[in-house]
Length: 126
Image (tube, rainbow, N blue to C red):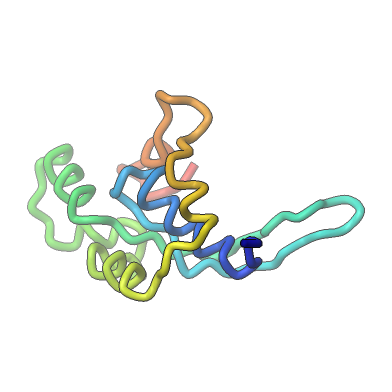
């Protein structure tokens, strides 16, 4: 079974949630361009992603900052729909062969996690 180009971004979103962030964040609604020329071979240039924060991550943030703020799920902006956004994504997502291939692949450094790239104080991605 060959990997379809349309599966790549869906598999990436699935991977961000299940593997990279360990069920804390989902990066989805990926838009951009695919570049494949003499200078750049097979690269996606993505813009304006949506990041949904899971209930697990929200609780960790509340404990860390000792806050009961109900708006904490919007730490990545108004498009962060929290657990509902994650649930909606997975209600239509069907894991592909590529999802299964990426299923157990962690980031290069075992000490580094996807969530380490998020500065919770500034709400920015490094």
